[in-house]
Image 1 (cartoon, rainbow, N blue to C red):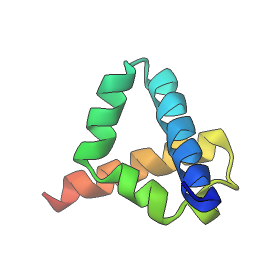
Image 2: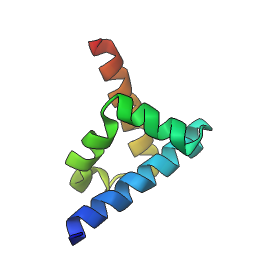
Image 3: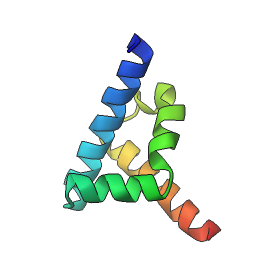
Image 4: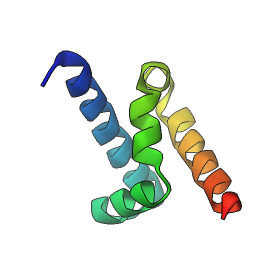
Length: 73
């Protein structure tokens, strides 16, 4: 795995861990939720910008992304 892919994987793992802790859900529940709304792909596509933000900002961005996806349905 090249360095960029490894960095993205670490970042996504960090986001999953922080999101599950913030919401009080299991890792499996967090992955299911983030997968359902395409958050994991979003995080991977925009990691260069997102990884420079604070933990709280990322969690709020994920919540906003999920809300927007729910409204699309």
